[in-house]
Length: 448
Ligand SMILES: [Mg+2]
Image (cartoon, rainbow, N blue to C red; front, side):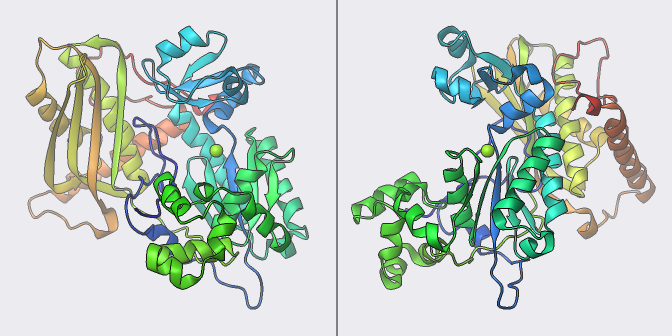
């Protein structure tokens, strides 16, 4: 039993955005809530924190790209054979459930529009939103692709606006410049800001402040398992103690909480009381792994086709590695068969890499080890683990430095080309250019 991390859980094939697509941390304290602060307490001043949450983010992105979808029931689906991973308000009203497989959804809710997810576009749009937030505050913690904590401390004075008007200005600017609707909760701690933003979803302005006067009312109306950091299981345990709401929880004394829930229980209590214990941190946290996978449009047992598909995933992951200035020391290839059997082969490297050509050579060997020409496959994917930052890297005694520098330059040039001319403008590692290129979205930056 523990206080869970409530970070957004991504769909399994989600191209996780850097830097904080952190997986659920599981048992124990949520260390990110106790990490180093970059937010300094202003002398005698009060800290304010906002949680900015994009509304039905994937759907909003699709509507930005295609405004004709506005007002219609829309669901975003994880790939052509996938499940519903996001729904518009109208789709929810029809009763489309989260996670329903596409083939069932189409049959049961034919009036809804189903769109395959375009994570590449979502990542870019997310950055546009985050960049606006960074214009307002030096401390922005990107919490997930569609959520960020923003340090509001001192901003009311700087912008000569009260908290509500400041939130409104940011909301309007994001709507005008990025065409994405956001909900904003403001309070004096992350936990309260999150609660405020949840409550704001039911308001017309989609902005809510949880101040001294409204805080207790808010806590009385908040079920205990709605509190950030308290999962469903812990909610059951707390209910067993007669704690039904957030208000009931803060009535318990510190010793009682500490004995049963340790330091994290005390953190949650303090945060509910409006004391910022969990600071905003905009430090870069290296991801534990980077992966990319996708189902094919048609099952295949063509090795060259599989290699081409794998090359696309390798390129996508290499690009993400270069972006965080890292190299990988572990390369894994996942292969799924038509009848859902999964094969996985990985290799640990002496010398970390982040360049497509080097990695595809190794990945193709792994693929060939698993590949059987008599089997039909449904998907392929790549996983990178164990990262080294370029600045910390030690050169292998046997590696020639000029070659490494040349590859690094090539990798960076690829990224620049793509930025300019669109995704997959250069195909790396393709073994047979005549094998059709079926996967991915050829999205150009101009489309966004
Ligand atoms: Mg959201």
